[in-house]
Image (tube, rainbow, N blue to C red; front, side, top):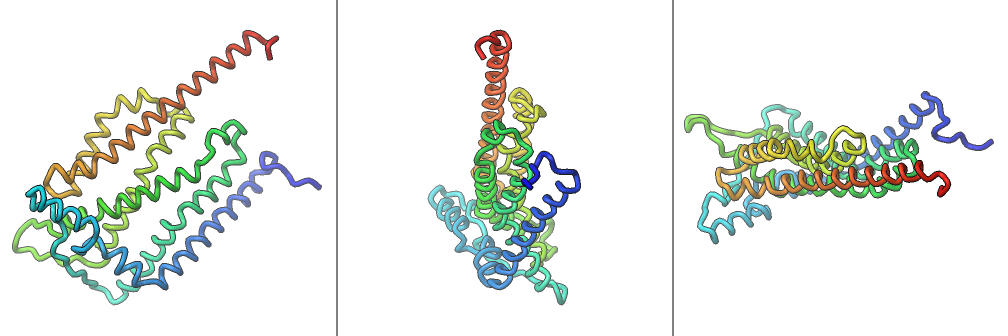
Length: 282
């Protein structure tokens, strides 16, 4: 008996297929989390705790640049600070949390592949051709965003928040939990923000946004980006531009993608109109 086609499956059968995609995704995260848990020193000493150290590439680069330009405030994290734990199980708990986050970030390409494998059969052949490479480009943008957040935003945020004082009489002793939450939230948020071009693509395809809409709210988006950059960076224009510029470029890329999709949709509409007017030529 021939295998039942995807579009002929019942609702419960679709749920069963989705369940296995989800199970495989969780297995991938779990296995990668185990690997991250085992290699604790690499994950913590080399990766997680590195942005607060003076020898971190971004910190060295900005300190050297500050010396060249005569702007001492560009030098960040020149004095590393210690972290503390206030609960007995906090270090073990954060070890588990960081391992799971590592599994999620490293396994993102496979997780999105499973997600795409579930929805792809429901697309028309033309839509599949249009969305070819979705897994590659979505994964690439996410990993680029993670790298941007880790190498640029994280050290700037750690420096700003770690040295911020409301009063000289208040002593700041950051905990391991607060540090990990800061770095992980920045990295994950950057990875998601870098999906903006993909989001523009699908929202335009669905007819929810268009180039005119994105252009209308361009000023609002730029103000929000600059405000975010001002919050997480030291009080100098150079650092703010360093963070804001890539995000503004991503927004402009999203507008370009939306324009291209709308243009193709119009061309396809004109082609269909010509065929309707000249049925003998079909």
